[in-house]
Amino acid sequence: MLKLYYGVGTCALASHIALEESGADYVTDRVDMKANQQNSPEYLAINPKGRVPALVTDRGILTETPAILAYVAQSFPGANLAPLSDPFAFAEVQAFNSYLCSTVHVFHSHKGRGLRWASEESSIEDMKRKVPDNMRACMAMIESRMIKGPWVMGEAYSVCDPYLFVVSSWAQGDGVDLAEFPKIAAQRERMKQRPAVQKVLEREKA
Image 1 (cartoon, helix red, strand yellow):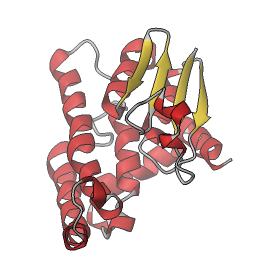
Image 2 (cartoon, one colour; image 1 turned 60 degrees about the vertical axis):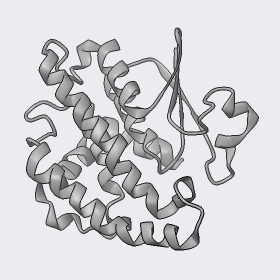
Image 3 (tube, helix red, strand yellow; image 1 turned 30 degrees about the vertical axis):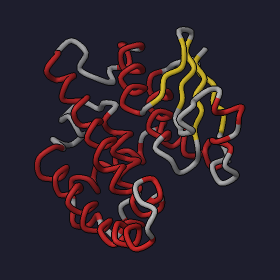
């Protein structure tokens, strides 16, 4: 059985939704991020990076959202969570999720985790000031060049969609009005209607 370690309000929500959509037999373990449980010896034995998500499989532990999403899609092909038979289309899925991970998430983190990149307070404050502009530029890129609609990859729902759902949920707090980006806003509304999404959101509230 798979076991997902997640934290409320984190990008682990994407993996949680993907697992629920896949029909996988899995359990979850909530990591209390506010209590710094991610840096406890017990959790560091699972993920030395001190981050979520982490997915325990029968072959070992996977970390990093794009890797977990790809693993779920490939492990449960009947759920049709990625275009697995088309190498180019699957690479497009990987490219989109990598952009969210390596660029958008990093810009978002500049607001609250500047100490990862700088020690001078003035540098950290400068990074915070850039967050709205950087996040708006990312949303504009996704809106105009990446999301095909009605789902990220077009007509078919994929593991890109829960990841965008998570990242776009940070926009307002980062000073970005999603009303400027109707495709992304519409995708969020579609996501909210999916039973798996509703079930996971309710579970993470409990």
